[in-house]
Image 1: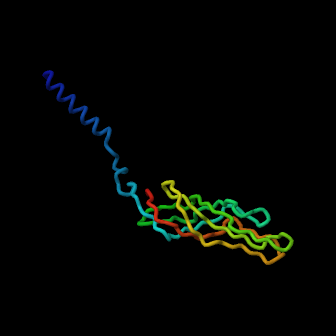
Image 2: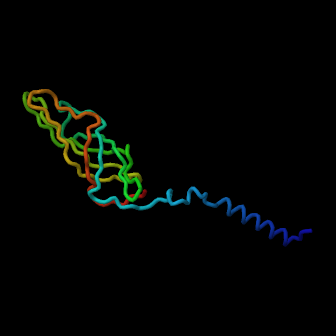
Image 3: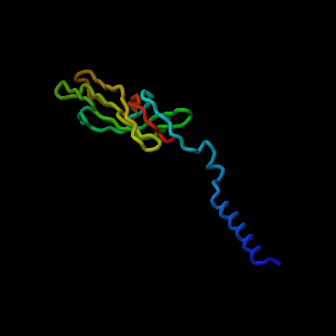
Length: 159
């Protein structure tokens, strides 16, 4: 027969075991694949984006904001730092009009993208210039127009 002290020891052991198992971290959460790491996205890393909207020289003005989507994953050491499909933003930098007000040239750039941890990654893009010969129609940058940019400065990303 159990005495009062033996009962307390058995109860304490049972509580300790159940508490430990209740707070145990499942093995799928402790694998190295799911552990967040801080990785540096270095200046100069290439980011390719595509334009989400068609723009034309008759309706845009310098300073208009543009929406882009990142085309492919930007990876460092096997970790995605900027995911394909992430949003990016840019601007209309220049609009040249000629021939009775018809647009002859639009210059657009991409300025930033969103990293996997939500941070804004500042970019420097090669300006994309859409031209049309004078008086031969309206200049248009179509949906899916590709632009290439480079990361402007080193940034630590939680990936």
